[in-house]
Image 1 (cartoon, rainbow, N blue to C red):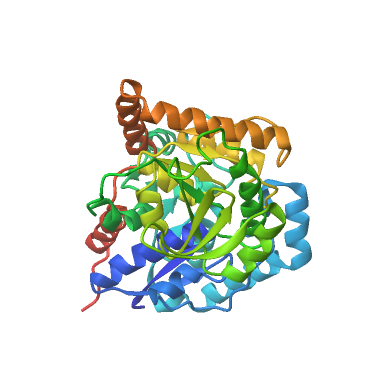
Image 2: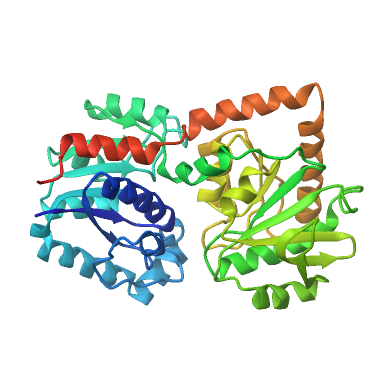
Length: 409
């Protein structure tokens, strides 16, 4: 019984779990991971052993958002896969001295079934959604059990709300996914020659491809003078699985062509070009693209939260899912507050694209206003601190774990 097990059920949850795992290893702990949804790529990139066979499902673990999604998960065998992972945890429970559950009811329930001491980072729920959090049954009952030694929420309001409801301490230590931005936040930046728009189509395939297609239809609709050279810098942060050849094939029907971008003015290896517009394509530089942006065009979940945490205004554009649907975007606006904006209208329709382009223009104008701009940026920073918290969440969580559960000598 020597290792700490990171138990998570989602791509964003895996990311936070991996960042926390790296901090725990730096403090001398032995760490393993059991991702309940997908392949746990964040753990693999961090070099944290994944202790079970993993599978990827078409819903990306988001089937609960609709009846069709639930039926799809049943048809693809996700419930049986999840049950098999829980059984494996029960068989291997003696290997672990602590479970760190990251996510929602599912890892909380699995931890309780294993009968091991646990701590919970309850990232999936927030009181910002409704004002008073209503945890799904039996999550509230489980969290009151003595096996859960510490509970951490994703924001301060939720910590206060759940502490009152459960009559036990729930604390807010920050969100580990913000730690990815720490190094970029400290980098000196040259004075920008024009505003920058970060384009974030998401990380799940094939959804990210569909989202990028909508974005490529939107960008030519930006009002003058934004499509003109030097008026607005466009930079897309793409997942590595979305390769240049795939991007070129996707972009061609919308009038974009792929070109080499290795010149002095465009420090990106590849760019998409359409008339005067140039969209820089960046892989593996998400933090740099987001950190240097003035405004964010997002069709992504965790990435939008990171943008808000940095005090960036975010324009949402809903897609067809399975993640970034109109319903998901609306819930995210309740979660993240008035720094998020979304034009009304049906998904992908010309009028919706046109209104989204107009919204981008209006927000850029507001940011550049010498009177209103600075006050608005200050307010956005306050919203980020309130809804997301400061960087260093991984370190604070790891320190709390090691204080309560010292590494065996």
